[in-house]
Image (cartoon, rainbow, N blue to C red; front, side):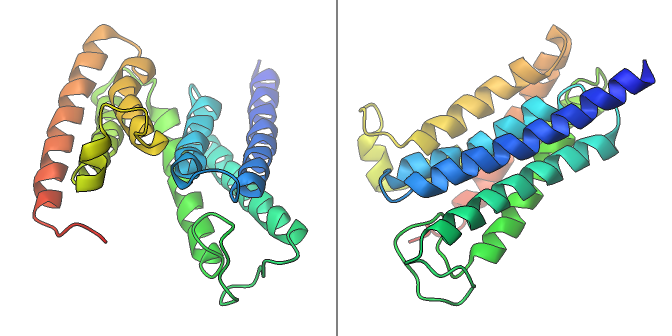
Length: 219
């Protein structure tokens, strides 16, 4: 049984690494042809969903961290492969900035480091989300609250407020709302845990919105 469990975990690692690289390569290659809000939808939200799916139910936090790290390594490999295939775009940081790529070329190293940290955090969330205790409620609730707070921050933009209710709403904005509302229901195992997690989500989102409301809008 232990051998089967370890083989299953190793299989998840390979799947996470492969899918992370495939999604990153496909998205980075098509970034020039896709609208910016579509690119922002899959990077990092689609990667985060992938890590949650790969780490959900993993019993050991070390395995969850490793799966999240390998998925991050796969996305970094996909990004670098796409840059290597695009001969007009320099790969080294500090080069001439181009229009292609996610987050700009000059900051690719920083972007990959941040993305890897986010994916590792999603991996820990996937590990803890199945626990029936308050720890799982807190972790999933905080993650969902942060997503909803980010959604509210995006809505502070007058341009986005004018587009709400139309088909022109950015995909990334819709992803924030759907994930923030759905994660407590999908990830928690019982009805009582879902209610507690929803309460944590609401409190966290309100606190973050209050803090963010005191900050000036980014340009």
